Image 1 (spheres, rainbow, N blue to C red):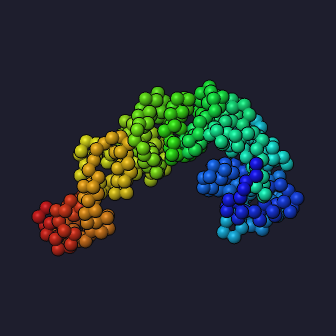
Image 2 (image 1 turned 90 degrees about the horizontal axis):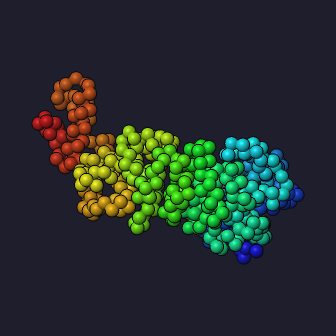
Length: 399
Ligand code: ATP
Ligand code: MG
């Protein structure tokens, strides 16, 4: 097959392919960008594979960065764009089920395509738009199938993360996992325990962000992958609570982890521990704890404006979506109105300071100043006092 027209992103990168070819080497567009273009999806990063060795690439281009030179990847900078150029390679060893003991640079594109995970990811395109398709990836794209390149079982033994990648591509592309590939995941799901949580985390989130996340998650559970992830052991029933008729999309990490905490009935310290196991960042963890608290308040009809304010108004829109997912009924318009009426955004907007409190009450500095300040802030948020120095002073003297 030849592409009728190269996508703009490829056209822009053509001078790079040409420079490599003029130096006597081969160069192709490969991986996700080829797959996504053929599917009519937007392309995010253009990856280039080449027969030139990293040192050879570095001698062709003026501005390069050694991104992953051991694995054959050099980043080339042209104008304002950067491209990852990776030498054709084969991998061998894989004694630990996660990374090859040995990476060998080769001059053959076919050998490079063989080491790729799925047939739809093993397509290459040359500068004229000719598609190299050694593993019937085009047929699988047409039939919407995720199929391992070669023997699935072996491929998952080489790198167990590929099993997670299968469910994540299913969720992103709304494809089916081909039967043998699926069976191999089921038989080898235990191997996921060999994989660093950071890598699982990345694929797991990409899965949840996918439009068809429910299909990905269904297989994640049914094929046994969830059993080998922290906090999900024997929680198949809880996890599938996420899968209902509500059509929501996970728009960020906070929303995803909060939804998980909620279905797993993990609160406060337990929820925090769960997120720590998944190596969720501090900032995200804090937001998730606040979001879950708000969700629970909404569920019990127990929320108040101070709660929303202290838990972060930014977390509120996530809570709305999650209420939708979990069938928690709330009066969104009413709540939004209440939020829009909060007179301050943060304590920085208060028209009184801790020093003022010390002066007005003629007391010594100490922890009680903070308590007074919080009480004043709460009174402003709840509309009991106007945020002006005069009113706040009067209120403080009556406290
Ligand atoms: P995305 O749209 O998320 O970038 P992608 O297919 O480009 O999807 P990447 O993780 O960027 O995925 O990897 C680029 C390419 O490298 C893949 O298309 C695939 O050919 C190959 N690849 C990536 N990870 C693996 C792996 N674990 N095993 C085998 N091949 C892989
Ligand atoms: Mg990619």
